[in-house]
Length: 472
Image: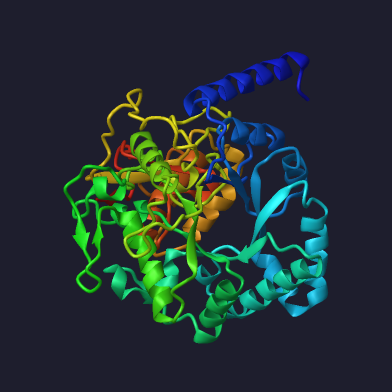
């Protein structure tokens, strides 16, 4: 339970943060085109009320949810924020099966809040084609049709229906003119999706991150090109289309345009459902720092809020609705360290770096941020050990899991072996985590273990006990 003193201090802290954003965003009250993704995979985040106040202070124009949480939607009714809600992947097949389920979903999640809550998009599913679930793929467009039909029954015509897809929906993206949809996605799925978007004048929503293609090849791809820095001398000319590109984001967006064009759909507009840059990460994740994150988001905002719109080389002059990922660092997201460090704000609601979402202030120079030291790939050994924040009481299942995997993962922990002592669950778990990660990193394993593990470049070995490591 909060004490009165605690509540007062929290209120003062929130007001201070809001004042910071009012200063950074200037005095402009103009409508903002930029949206922010409000994900909540964290156990330490500000309340929905505080979060909405922060979004307003940041002068965001839109907010995108990953569900249709009734508390959040009710709180949003008192604002001018445009809202995007989501049908979760788990709900798709049920809605696709019967119109009554779609009607019930619309009753519960739209009619209960609309029009006082300014819902403008319903996204059906999230990165559906990234999951190997053919039935889910087949149910996607039927579910979208039923949701749209239910909206039409209530004469609601200003809410568009779409679905956000990851870039892995494309089989090739370079050069952009060669792009096509992944051959494993059946025509009976992708063509009806395009027909639906075209006929309803909706958008092809895409999650597009320049960080990922750059970070897997940082020595051969320009960081400035990925960060959309202006004034750089690097350009790329598509050998087929003849279009010239000055940044990686345009290349990736135009690959979507060309893929749709190959299916005969040249008029479906693209919207960016997610984009951003991580401000921190693991040792083996180059370029994840606040300086680069601030640079990318600042350049992104300048691009997509430009008046008149800039568009892309293949679609010049076209406005691109854009949602930045994400509002907060979410500490319960699994995977590598970057997964938990995309936030504009920390879990206290304080800004991680300065950003003007309106695009009206001069370009941020981020003079308060130190020059990054991790823009190149790390070279050396890395180990995976128990995090200092982990409770020993939680380590047992993770230790057992790691030791069950692979070939001899925990052999050195047996009595009489080199790493048996000290007889400590923390010491044994650190060895097991490092041994497991060293074996399976190349297969996609991360040093996470449900938040119990972190990477280290300090050798945890002792005496004759050598911990397995990853050598980069």
